[in-house]
Length: 520
Image (cartoon, rainbow, N blue to C red; front, side, top):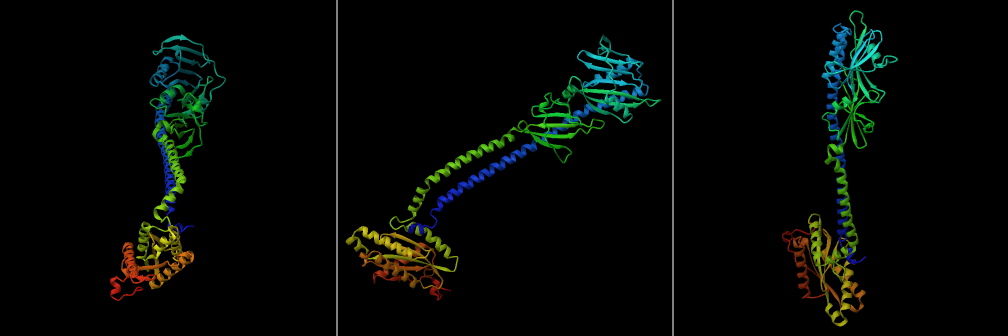
């Protein structure tokens, strides 16, 4: 370790600080980017959930506008037949009533009435037009096509009688007088219907009269999706078995992730980049089905959805830039350290130079002014040094200067500062405990340095050492420039009387002139 490194006082810390700053900036950037990406992801999900809730509300409302009229229409027809207002004996009157409901509600695909006497009369929407199907009391089936005025337009094959009543009809008869019952019916061709049936007890014998309304899935979809942005959200109706009653034609679009209950009675889940919200239909007299809504965050809030990716790109750029700067500093660390050291040290002796003496010396004095201690500022000059250069050459003179610097460093404290002012002039800024004798301390240092120079450079036996000093307490000042001037004046003034000794600057502290002591 050189004397400059020992007294360098944190000069290499400049590169360390720069590296720490770069790492700190990088860590902050990474943390900020990750936090913003997390916030963006969270905000995207929250916004998507809010949108899904709105779509679910709208979907449920539309489903209600379909379910309530269907249930009410079935109730009205069943009540009219059960009360005798309509009878199947008057086919035209019953067909007119059924057709009125079908015409008023486009989603109604089928509306029919079943009497306790096993009579059936109904109207169905088909690709050929309106189809009327009937079964007489004796079990004879018939069917024909009619126009919107219920005029016959042609005959069609009579429907085949089923082996037994459908499940929905049995359930309706079992729930006579209890209101609407709903079923999701999947037909042989793969299409499905939402079927609502109502059984009303007939006057007189209480036998059930059943009216049924069937809503075709295609018609349901057309009505439910009206005005819905299907590019951003997909909505489905699910029956209790989670079969799709209505929804997009492509069943692969349906995602069924695990759901967690939310505070508003709905359930929320996440799957395949989509937010899923599901809630009961909750319609009075309506089916016990659920609304299932899927929202694509990228379609709803594209700016927010893209933010995590943008933040990751930004983070990557920051990492590359910071890494490049860090690598550059690492490669330049030795030249930088050498530059820093050269700017603050004397090249011959490795001691602090005059600039560093002023900087660090003032720092020491500032610290001493805040604690119970004193600082001695010592200037040192080599006696008869010129004769060494003249008689032995400048190399010998450089050897003497290096020996002086080594001796000053060796006999100074770890916290002290040793500097070369130029030529054969040196300076020491030394800590003193209050009450210490500065004359004795400086004289001891001077004598040790003189002895070591003569021991290290035998040909320099004529070289002596003179010293001048002052202290912050003697001068009443904590300014390095003022103390150096006072110590140098003491040295120069003393050397006119004699060399090879120590000279103290006169006390100029006003407090000492009034009788105070240095250790007070």
